[in-house]
Image (cartoon, rainbow, N blue to C red; front, side, top):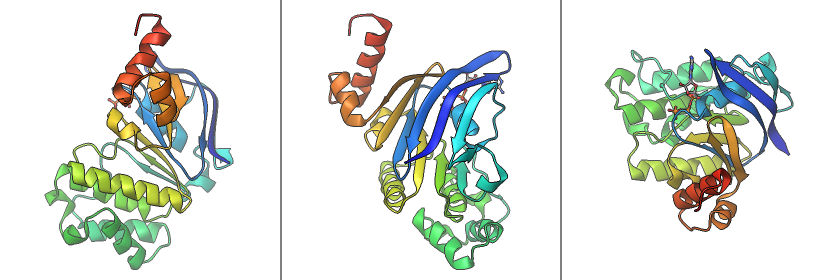
Length: 239
Ligand SMILES: Nc1ncnc2c1ncn2[C@@H]1O[C@H](COP(=O)(O)OP(=O)(O)OP(=O)(O)O)[C@@H](O)[C@H]1O
């Protein structure tokens, strides 16, 4: 089953055509990675998935409904690159506030805080957190609603390797429990952790693949090298 279907999506931002006509699907209950260099259109595409991006043409269907429908509000979680938590509240207060918005209790809030590894910092003001901790506080506030689709824009930026691995383990635990995750990254080593890969370049889909298939197509066990080989092959230059 597909959680997301995108058909012929065209998005302009300012005078630029950022997405010139994308079509793909996102399978339910899997971690799909959105990989591509800075400026390739990852954030724009994520905004379209959650329905906050003006779209020129094409359709984006999420959980069977048009992206951005009111009925999807509690079913889709979105964590932007800029943490969206209240600096003058503690981590716990933020999580409990968002839990209340979703009709969930304090216990769900505290569990979400623990899930992102912030139990020890639960009583700290968000203003006093590090950048990586703030990002995780934001993630906790999205998790607390128990969304069916979780869209995460570069969630591991600024995290140390241990936390990065822990977060990826958590993403897979969520997927095993049925959540669909779309996670963007510009770090190719994170591609290896995804079930599915959408490789973006200049707003176009260079490949809709899996890590294993990318390694085979790009003739390298190193995903970064494989990605570059695929790019070169597409552009007609020798690999
Ligand atoms: N408000 C805007 N007006 C005009 N152009 C924009 C606007 N926002 C983004 N863009 C352009 O759209 C393109 C895609 O941007 P987007 O943020 O989607 O890329 P990205 O792949 O998420 O990049 P990053 O990894 O750096 O966050 C870029 O060329 C960017 O300059």
